[in-house]
Length: 304
Image 1 (cartoon, one colour):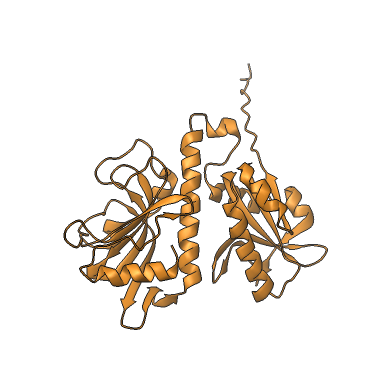
Image 2 (cartoon, helix red, strand yellow):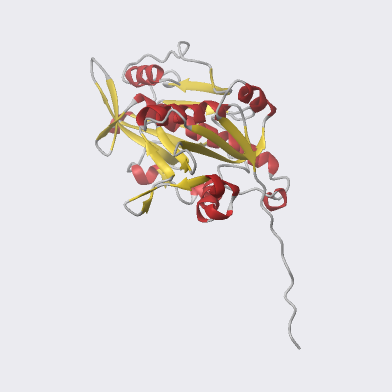
């Protein structure tokens, strides 16, 4: 869903028009549903992004919720109110994310869903604008926020299927943050540490979750030999050709903003969708690696 569609959604929310046929039907292989109400305008218009088998009344999914009365747009870890599945967003995420009911006092609905991003919205005759902490959020950041949540959603669906087996037995991390922390803390002992250096500024590590104006890079490092940057994108489970677009976006930013024409990309994942192979064939400067975690228990022998 691009900025134009999102702006149109906000504008229409303040009208009595309930028609949605002009909006896209899919986005990144997910069904996209838009609602301004059934019969009468709803208090909270929404846009949901649904995987196969999910519905807004039965499932979990990324969703935009526009709280018109408060002029707040929430990009949420959506959870259906009518029926709830046994599986939902990972517990580790929900235990840290803010409930919508904690963000907005006595919301009319959807208080049990969780906040991924929240934007204050202004809408006038000339433009629809979005703000966080009184700072305007540009189109690229809005797009990055949505795409990152959708990527995580797809991975959580893969995890749900894969949970028929133990994640430990598969040798995978449960969340990308765990993989990221492991690499950072053990950088010098990994193959990456032989070729790349982490970046520090005034004694502080800035490589991890490197902030750009189009989103955050998982890890940004420098080639020891050339000084050029490498963009490292991590996927704790299976990744797909979606990742190529994401890493190319960050590489383009580094090339322009950090004046580095030699920037390369590195994808590290627990597995790969076959479609990724076709995408990589047409892309230079991007390499892919898989990882596996080894876990072993040794029985402690008591001394006599």
